[in-house]
Amino acid sequence: MAQPPDYRTLEAAATWFVQLNAGKPSDAQLQAWQDWLGKSQAHAQAWARVEKLQRQLGSLPADVALPTLAGVRARRRAVLKTLAMLLAVGASGWAVRESNPAQALMAELRTGKGQRHKVMLSDGSQLELNTDSAVDIHFDGQQRQLRLYRGEIMVQTASDPAARPFLVQTAEGSVRALGTRFSVHSEDGVSRVSVLQHAVEIRPVDQPRLMLRLDAGQAVRFDHRHIAPASAAAPGAGAWTQGMLTVIEWRLADFISELRRYRPGMVRCAEGIADLRLSGAFRIDDTDTILENLAASLPVKVKYLTRYWVSIEPA
Image (cartoon, rainbow, N blue to C red; front, side):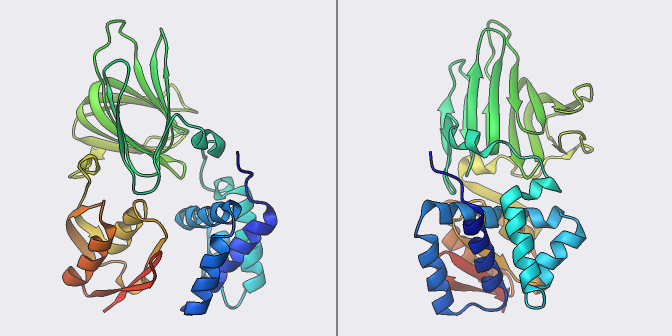
């Protein structure tokens, strides 16, 4: 098994992040970054932590998040120190509880970014994995359990002659199926559940006596201690199983954040256009076409600095 990146490699990844975000990077800088990225698996792993950290920084306390992003030029040394430290210990020290990454790498079922996978389980239930997901299957005489380490799954349960309960376990808690079709998404210390048929029961891992029944057409978010109020499931909540992403009046920044789940590399959205609204149905297997079509429907332009570095800017 590949060794995780050491602190020096993480510090180098942090340095690249600061350089590439201090201003518009030159072609030479981008090529040098790509050369560094391709030199070893450790470099790629360190950069993957940078990408994950970008998604987590929004949940960090202001005294940590602001120096890392707003003070790039003025506080370069502090930025590098903070970023490298966060990459080494994980933003989870402040904001999230993560599954063991080694377990995710060794999981029985895995998908890479942009991949999906469908499998029939031994009891006749159907399991679908969305992009960048990892799941273990544990069926025995007492229960049927799926362990979701990261990503998103859709489950259609089958009846069981032995009446074994069907559970999906995440780092945040458990989801018990009540003869149902439902999705579970676990990322950055939060699990999200949408029920398409029948119902499920949700229990946070640190508050097992706290239980919420979620019925068809409802969705909810929960962490290891709390369950948020249930709400209506988003239209097209299971559309990804058909290769589609359906959005209604989404902020552009939120849409781009979701698109990053399916596209390798980096896609950035300028702050000035983050609040533009977008609706439509998009094929997630063709993210290039999605990006091309943005300019046709919104006052934006799409700039390809490289194949793996895309910037969405005001037109």
